[in-house]
Structures are given as structure tokens and as C-alpha cells.
Length: 268
Length: 273
Image 1 (cartoon, chains in turn green, cyan):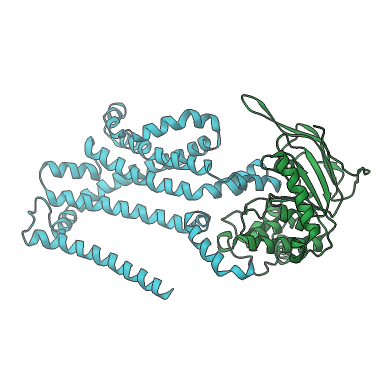
Image 2 (cartoon, rainbow over the protein chains, first blue to last red):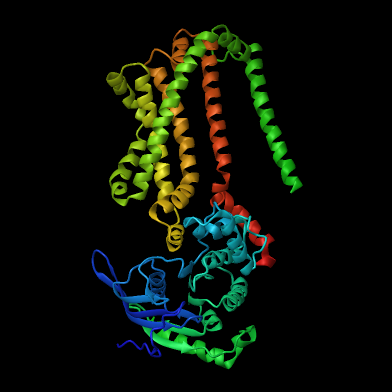
């Protein structure tokens, strides 16, 4: 089966926040065999876009995200962010928000947000000021002194987002950030994320299992097939912004979600 | 909330009452003749025995304390160091862990006579024995603590550009501290056991030696004076560990103790999700 990657051909954008994935493959070597996790994946994300990756479990969408973050090296192809290849984690270019709150339990919320700055020896006062700004942005003004265990699941993920944004990278990568949250919190956090995204103009790449979440949040949805992971569809979501709860029951929303679901059912 | 505090206070008072009750029984039962003084000498006669031979007990305590402190340094230092290595490197883990785990199940005290052959009946053999005795649980706990660090935390640190040494100092060590502390608690207690027991078996000094010697001449009051000293030693050790644990209390919050609070936090702060 040929990859259906029908990416709009564009000149490689050297602008901050542009992501270019070119013919990327990933092969895991195990003792008995080589497992092809990703095969010939190419896609381009323009600066400031909100792109969601969906696909059945094990399709390599998280792997692709980890490679964009520089946390894993692809075995074939190239990934460039803001015009330069990404060979290792670079918090100046890419912030990452993980699945469950990966906050350090022994640090307060503000110390967690300051963590990436502390790693680079940013002076305390500057660190604190930036952390306060980031916490304010995610709506956690005044919660900085709390430890993660004193925060709800949604608040913890807000802290994670603040930590991802504190160095002001043009790209924010999110690996199923709301998967562990309950339905209501998840909806609220989706709206919050869209608000933060609109306020900061970041390029967001968001991995999720939820088709509703995908269509609700995205400018573009990239659908991947089961292993070996390939891009099987690339949808433009034309729904107006701000997105509202009422859109969920609309025809446009439903047909987009159905289209994604058909791809996933086929490959699962 | 206030109900809970009052419950806690009454539990605390109750604990004191139980201790006071036991002390009263210790004094009262032998005095009333319900228990022969040979089996349980009254508290007062125990204290008198200890007081009259205070110099002897003081000397024995100094010997025992010295052995405990040195053994503890070996057991805890070595246990943490080796546990950290074994916990973080998969190859030595596969090699060593099964051996250490099965060794832990062996009653090591059977090896003590061999130690006296090698090192004599002085402090060296006690230190060697107690060090190994306390080393095993400390090492196992440290290895487990490092092995069970949430890989997500290390991945997150890496995504923020943390170098290997930054990950060690800022993530691995703080994350392992609660487990290491619980290992120290067990390991340290075993060090005290190891020193006292080895003194009781074959030796020429120390509290264990005194207990053993007075037992052979059926001087129960002096035996119990020694037992009381060991008791204080254990209580003192426990106080030190609790002090360290309190200082590291923030580190514990991510673990089980923190989970309970988690529920409360989720419930109470729901509106601000």
C-alpha cells in the first residue's frame, strides 16, 4: 500500500515554529526481529497551526512526537524545526507536555515550572518572574506554592503546560496530555488549551486517542495507520473559531469525525 | 478536622498510658511476688544494678556505640553506593540481585563464628558482621528505589535539556530518597541487632557481652539493665531516623502518603480545574 500522504507541497519554511518531517522511518530492533514502527512519514506544519495526530494504538504517533522532541532518533529521514534539524532535545525550540503530569512531586508548582530554566543556570529572580507569568497564562495564578499532590489532575496538566511554555519555544508538542483526565475536566482543558494557544501563537502538535478531541481542537488532523505507521489522511478542519460545545453535534463536525473513524477502523 | 485532631491526641495519650502501665507492671508484679525476681527483676532493682555498676555499663555502651556507628557507616554508605550502581545499570542488576536477594533470606548469624576466626573476638568481627547484616536491606531498598523511578520523570527532564549529571542530582536522587530512607531504617536496626547479638555470642566487651555474662551467673537485675540500654539505643536510632524523615518530608509527598491528600485536593479544588 502506497502512503497516501497528500501534503500540500510547500517551500520549506525557515520560519520559527515551522515543522518539516521528511521520509521519516523508525525501526525498533528486538532480539528476534526488526519492528517497523514508522514508514516513510512526511508532513509539514506551518507556524502557528494546531495539528492533531490520531491513529490506532501502536501506530507510532507518540514515537513520531518523541522524534520531533529530539528524545528519540529516527532511523531514516529528517525532521527540521524552525529550519534546523532536531538531533537532541532543544527546549529553546520545542516544549513538551507529557501524558500524565510528569511533574516532580518533590518540587512546588513554581519550582516545577522553573526547572528547565534552573537547568540552564538562569538567575533566580528572572526564573521566578518567568514562572509566574507562565502560571498566570495557564490560569494558576496563586497556586505556585503548592506541591503536585495538592493539585487536581487538570491543574497538574496546567502546570505541565506552563513548564512547556516557560522558555517560550515556538513549538509545543503534547503527548496525550489529557488522557488521564475525566470527561468534564478534559473538555474544560481543551478550551483552556485553545485559549492559551490563541494567546501565544505557538505551533502545537497534539497526539490523542479521542476523535472528538481531535476535531474539536485542530486546524488539521493527521490520521495514521496501524503498524507500520503511515499517514493515511490529512484533514483540514474548517470549523470557525472559537470552537463551541454546540459544534460537537453539528453535521460538519460529525462528518469529519466519521471520516477519521473509517480510516482507523480499516487499519485496526 | 477538630474531631480528627482530638482523636489523634487521645491516641497519643493512650500510647503514653500504655507505656506508663507497662512500667508500673514491671515494678509492681515482681514486688508483689507474682513473678519471681529471677525471671523479671523489678524496674527499681534493675536501675539500682545499672547505677551501682555505671562505670562498667558506660564502658560497654561506649564499645557498643563505637561498633554500631562504624558498622552503620559501612552498611549505609556501602548499601546506598552499591544499590545505586545495581539499580541504575541493568547488567550488574541481573548478575547480582538474585544472589543478594537469596543471601538476604539466609540467617547470616551462622557465619559469625567464621568472622571471629578471621578477625578475632574484638570489635572488628562485630563490625564486619553487623555491616554485612545491615548492608543487604539498605542496598536492596536503594536499588529498588532507583529502579522504580518513574521513567516519565527522566524523559521530561531530558526533554528540558537536562544532562546526565543534572538528571542524577535533580531527578534520580530526590526521587529515590523515600525508598532509601526506608532501607536505612531497616538496615540501621539490623546493624544494632547484629552488633548486640554478635557481642552476646563470642566477645570480650560491649553491652551484649555484659548481658550474656550476667545471664550465666543468673544476675537478672544486671541482665535487664543491659537490655534497658539496648532499648534506649534502639529508641535513639529511631529518633534520628524520624528526624531525617521529617527533614525530607517534602520528598515523601509524591508517594503513598501523598496519594491520600491527592483525593482530598481533587475534591476540594474542583472548581479551579
